[in-house]
Length: 211
Image 1 (tube, helix red, strand yellow):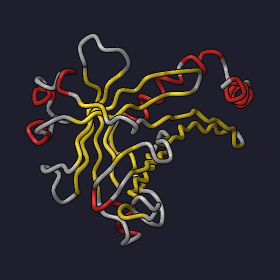
Image 2 (cartoon, rainbow, N blue to C red):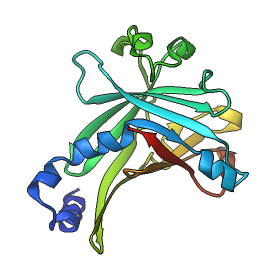
Image 3 (cartoon, rainbow, N blue to C red):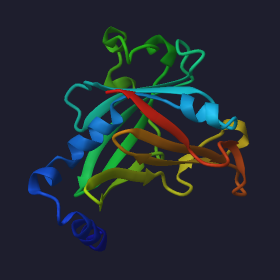
Image 4 (tube, helix red, strand yellow):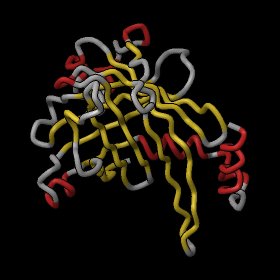
């Protein structure tokens, strides 16, 4: 961990103190909003037009920042196929965890990203932690010419996230988050390490459409 923190400090040593203090807020700003993979689906038939929404929610006195997440096909946005709650926590300088929670009867909360009243009954006691599926994110920064490039790169553990979907034994998620897009590559693997679901050629590119 000490070596990792040293590398991080070296990478961002030329940034101002104010910028460094706001990294956590930058991550939350990048994650919050509406996203679409429509452009990718039109360019590559291996990908679907999917809409992703993440909005801030309150979770009582629980620590960290919380996001309600909905994912649906572009042609059926009123019927999301994935609904989650993420708890985003800063665990070290430039290192964050996005802890993933599920909940029962998710469709009763469908559309909650656009109508907060639908989430009024979604409380902490109803959340079920997906143990082993936390995504650890690390902040990266580089200066290209006069342009500052900030991104957050992360993944689940190699085999820690259980999954039984389509014969899978475990799942992996890899994520790259910038101010303009979110790249997400979710895959399922059987006990022998053979991929059984998920995109095969690369991750979904979700372009940010609203803040």
